[in-house]
Length: 608
Image 1: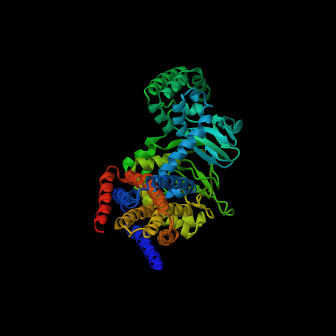
Image 2: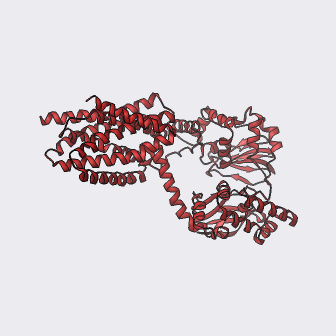
Image 3: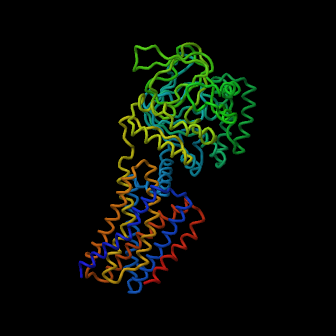
């Protein structure tokens, strides 16, 4: 009799969880849209709600064990919350979109708390009220750079404000043979005046050691001006002050009438919640670029480019003139910008072939583009051999271009599968065939979903979250723990309910389908995802069998307590992960889908 009960519990556990690998298998041949996933998840959540209400809560109440049930619910909810937070911190948040977004929001709050003291070191922001200061600090992001990196160069558009969290940065004077004139250390802010006047940089910033920076982008400042009255007042007062006028006279050599006109325009724009107008126009040479755009060489994404795309590209380029003998970038330097020659000559120096003559590039040649696209270090150095005019495109402007111009984005997407990019990754960057193929596939998926180009992994590099797959597996296991407890324990007190098995089956399928799609988008192999879900199915069956053994002869109140733990954990899981995930993907469709799932589980109850 006991063996029969244990076997029955095992089989029922397998049946309730077999929809887990089924969901993974489905993801191999069908990737449903967000709205379909939302319907499935909400339906499963409603079915599970009905099952735990009828088969756990109602049965315990019928036996008069409310207090044991209530205590178990609280324990189950707290236990789920504690374990869920622990696993999420180790990478388990990646198992669902909703948990990922929740994790990112929590990170943003933590980032705001860390950035706030640094933000207060800038006089213009020091007197902001606490809520406004926190909101502005939350718009900042952290960046890290190794030693010797140029954070910005002279004449670059000043679209970021920097505060040093760790490390040292030196400012160089391009008017004095790039000699350092100021050393910046922890808590120092720089690029402040260029940023707040929307000017171009008059100096060069280079990291003297590995640095960690707090960065405020101009787009974030613009959002802050639209939403924060205190920020508008503080910046208007700064712009109207003598410090700004002195900076514009000394650094940009602007005449007094120009300064006065700009100050009047800028104060009015800031108080109206608009962005700060540029005090110095960025030299883009848009008309000249439009004349040569269709005849550029060495990077096929510009071949046959249309007039609208040309306008979008030219609006994000800026023009620079380099003297003879200037280094545009060096071998090993990260590809954060690429160049288009208008006139002049550039030599590409390849350290791997020191005996060969350098490659010479001339007008309409594009260079630095391949390392730029894949986000890896340059494999050559670029040096001007005469006075040379170039257009420059920075990575942040390129990303904005992809978001703004679908036609150009399609060009880049089509280029990802071309042979010359594959050869570059294999031959120049020494990536294996597997790494190359996986990056191209991941980059294509990212762009298909409206995202940006991810950086390719360097040869021998390891993923930052190497423990994430285990944490994801533990997170999914945590979501499924309650059901195995309930199935095994329930067989000892009554026949198993069809509504409970149906509710668990219906909730597991969309859970596995949604999470499998997400994990594969994170780069996990299909075979690994399938094994993870299959192992969870087996664990559920074993857990149900063990539950039928552990609860033999226990007091009814203890069984009610166990039911409460399961109900509390499942209800917390539904509220924290399933329904938020469904609403995030489908919006208002969630309500009716949850209702129909609820009714479906009740229908199975009528069949008993």
